Amino acid sequence: MTITERPRTAAEQKAYYDEHGYITFPEMLGASEVAVLQAALAELLDKARVVPDDVAMTDVYSFTRSDTGERHVRRIFNPIAHHQAFYDLVFHPGIVDAVESLIGPDIQLHHTKLNLKPPASGQARFEWHQDYPFFPHSNYDLVAVAVHIDESTEENGCLRVIPGVHKLGPREHAFSADGAFSSQLKDQSFILDESRWASVTSPAGGVEMHHCNMLHSSTANRGVKPRSTVIIQYRAADNVQLSPDWPDRPGFGLQIRGVNPYRARLFDGTIVQLPTPIKDPTQRDG
Image 1 (tube, rainbow, N blue to C red):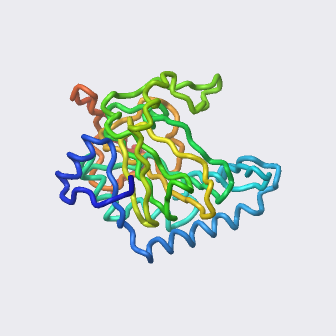
Image 2 (spheres, one colour; image 1 turned 90 degrees about the horizontal axis):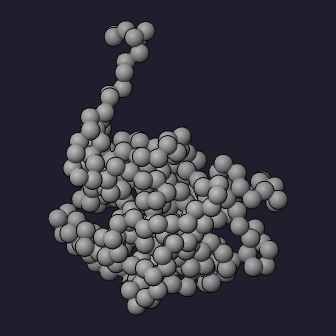
Image 3 (cartoon, rainbow, N blue to C red; image 1 turned 180 degrees about the vertical axis):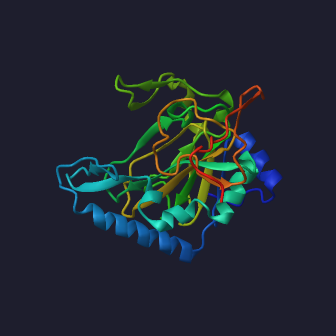
């Protein structure tokens, strides 16, 4: 499945997303915007060269090795903290407009990352998984936005999804003893029928958005071109994280659009009012 034109109005986008669990925007970013992101990525990759060769991970970079032993950057953590271009990207009007059509006008950032698939590396594959089990929230208005810095093809490991499977809700995942994701669904029956898989290819500048319960994966890059993708996780402002981790991530809870209602909306529609920030009594007005 190649990215094609999708519903244009906000209502059509919402209906498509609710039915299929994902939606694509093949021409979201223009060539000049893509060039800015590519240049920013090049700067960060250049800085990674000073990291000693025997280091597998820092607070900025995660490294992998190709089948021939060459080291590559596999992931850049929290890119909004390391380059202004990626910080600006989370406020991109076209992206945020589309997100608003899916989860409403009050939007917060959850986190960002930059996933890289170096050419012919044979690495950086991701098994089938959902996002929700990593950071469960009080409702499902939690959407992943994939911004393609490079062209994404089946050869270089494009995203794969199973349309409609998000309606089944969260699936149980296997976690290792230390809490790390082991890249396995406990019930593999959901992914056995390959006829249901959809490969979501995209030109550079294209954007894909998917539901937090969408099963998705990608293969290793077996091509000759890189595949680099910025992942931006947005949430509705009344969608409160239930697990205690992640709040120390740069940008966590950043208000992107609208207001913070200081309430939690639960799955059954119940609204729980939350305390607003308490003013420091030592600070005076004026």
